[in-house]
Image (cartoon, one colour):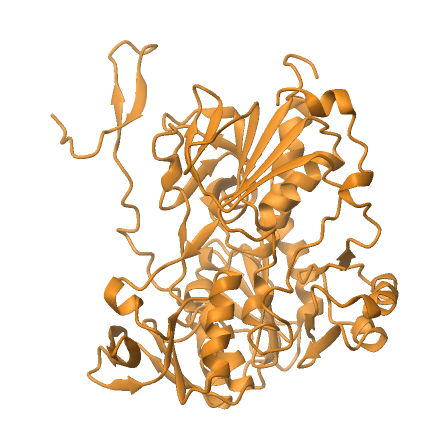
Length: 459
Length: 81
């Protein structure tokens, strides 16, 4: 490899989809040095999307979603069950929570996200309060459902919450879904499609409560009994599923000097991590849910995408870029894609709908719940699309997005050419609570940007 | 055996659900559900489904040699330990 010695030791931090696919790609691309994979869970890499679908409906056992090794990983050292606690870039070592130091020449960060916990820890500790992020979460929830429940209350109607509600209805269990926004899925797909999703909940017998929040989880004898809502009503239930999204696992990087925080770990389009001072590193790479990378197709905005496809593809791009010659590196420029199955409907999306201002239904019928719709930005360029049971058209829309095409009109002659506001909720302005970065030094060549130590105020 | 379907690629042609109905099912008209770790007696049917998928969305570890077979040069593997 011109210009630098070939890496002998690569450490992958994170043993889920991105970590495994990254490791497999390293071997496929010819890395024959020492490969170490670190994971906080005890289990070998397993697939998470089935947990809220075929696992929760009871068809597949929670421990039967182990991911295949698509490449021989050869002599790989697995350090499972202990999380990484620190990245010491000066020493070139990953430090585990038990103090073990693992030296690296190159490191791939793929620590993903964890379930956002219910904020009141005493309420979260009630028996019957569950999440669904890990295999263990799913097994615990299934134990509760199998024991017989009168009602499940799902907190949050994003994709996870909606899939949990769907699985409960599939099992004949009464379910109440509480969503702060005016409809399900609005964060990802906007209010127009949210209204379609709300109809889906209604048609499948879900008690959907939108525009309200859960104020408290009430229990007696350590067991969850009811959820108190902001509209003054109470929902009696035996199980509460907390589906409020994820928290990115970046705390272990706090002293690493990387530009990391609640929004993720910043990276360039080639998956190289960015340091606090804005410079790109050459030995730290990032992939999966925790990566916040500059996407060439969307004005180089930093995007975090918690999608299966982003983890699978991003890890392959990152791994390849880690060991190829610098001039052969490629960007992770894939158009984002995601999918969900709920209430018997196959939902697929490409692009980044949340960047859109307007939406137009292009095929089928939203009333019938089978359609395609395209999202456009304010300049009239297509930035995303969604299909409900129109999945075979997704590739067509992906092609339009890749070509930065104009927002199309309806393809079906009987559809009105109606572009309407996509109705995304305003982005929470105060979502970033990371430490402050300040500029130091006076001479232009001596200036740097560093993280302000916690608690110190500006002079 | 272990199976993963790239559901971004899957287009719901359902050839797998015809050939290996105990491992692949449609939920509704086009949403695929599958057994990620089907039992060994389903292996032949699953491999037929893999071959028949029009968009080649199904991957398995059936053809991947076990770790012991992997070609890791002993000298290199021993480095830097």
